[in-house]
Image 1 (cartoon, rainbow, N blue to C red):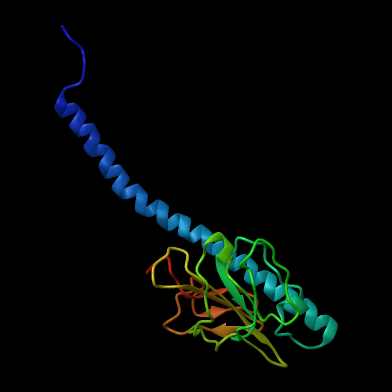
Image 2 (cartoon, rainbow, N blue to C red; image 1 turned 120 degrees about the horizontal axis):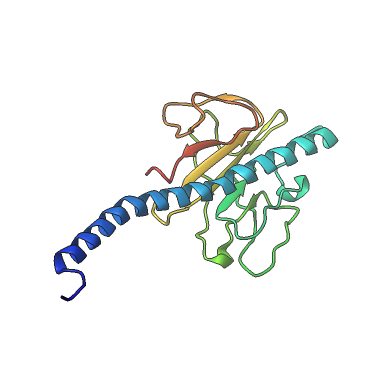
Length: 187
């Protein structure tokens, strides 16, 4: 008597593995994309803290990331803006130093990420800007290499989000809380 598996038993096992993979792989990709969004949230909170500390020292907000001391680590998937200007802190080569005239931190192009520009915000705030009474910061990145970008914003003022906002926070976003203006994970 020979022992072994029949062809039908092997086909059933392959079918079960295929069904499990069809369920697990999309969930894994969505989980991975959500974990990449934590970079934007953490760095926007760091930008908020840097702006608030600068305001306590100088009694004004600043548009310059170098002046407020905001410089996220390399390998950043998101571009960070204090204003909608085009003066980037370049991350093209192997080294980077935050320029005193830079108003934004570029995506780490050296690591192969696609460069981004400031996006139009829809979560109850306008474009990234600095005024005498407050600021709005923004993070823009493409975390899953499709045509839609992931857009996050943070403001020194509390705000009410609109119906077009993808924020998970609901209708009211407190001062210093990042809001997801456009969610690249769910699109």
